Length: 410
Image (cartoon, rainbow, N blue to C red):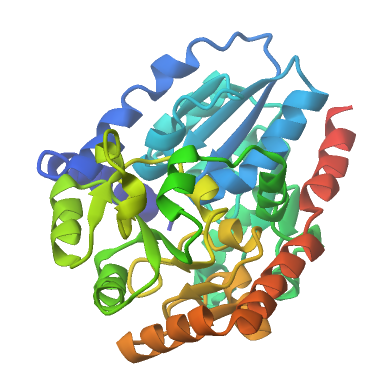
């Protein structure tokens, strides 16, 4: 089975390299990996290195509180952060607390061996669910302490099927699993892994600190002008269709839309579809922006602070592509609305059950809940308070994980 996997990995990489000639995201995926070994060459043999691997941006946010704790407690250690996806790497390639930020090489035996040799980590910290067989086998072979952080396991994963024992074997590389919930722990125990702790999700620690930072944005204050405001974050076309229909029939509300992708053509089409006074973030200078009804944020890095000005938040992705981060708006104690596909996200399952977050399936449900949230202030406050309480109750994963790390490094 390993031979078949290795052959498939080489073929897949070759196919992606060709596809990258015609697709800009795949091109980043391929070309970025060509720079990985050069980036790692700055590491010296005597350096003590902690290596973090995150699939993309969401997983990086789970790594971030631990990285911050490592840099505080072990300032002499080097930190390497690798990404699988361009959407994570491109945003965080200049992350100030990492000594090296790079792409994880494609999971072929030779590339992985070279990567581990260059990084020579004292510890490998893998976030959530990145299980690459060659990578894990190499970590085990070299007896490198390896932990999984904020892990999530589901019954339909290959590890829990009788036909995939070879995949299950790769999990033996982990010295400890820090998982988010009881189900994950029980699933691992069902295949005889007992080195498991329920620590929760480190993102709660990350978002819990958001309230301590300066979230002020003068241009948002001017635009909002003390009016009721809906912030729609990380939206895709499926979200924007419902949103635009609602906006075009609304009154006495302001809207801030932060699309997930910065495609200029798509943003211009979104702007043209709205029958209200609209401006783009990049066009704000020289305008009396308080006179406008809708702001489209065509830049990255501002959404977290913008949520602090929302009366209600809509978080995109749950109609097709995958739900984006609902913990950031939740930490500000505001109601959240999402689409219907959220069952792979524990925090969304919890908050929908607790009724701090509302899932909608169609335009009628979308418009109905937003009208209710606007009209019924008590309902809006109660819904937002549920989210605030939920965040506060779930803080603490980082401290638990750092206890384990301290024991390993000291």
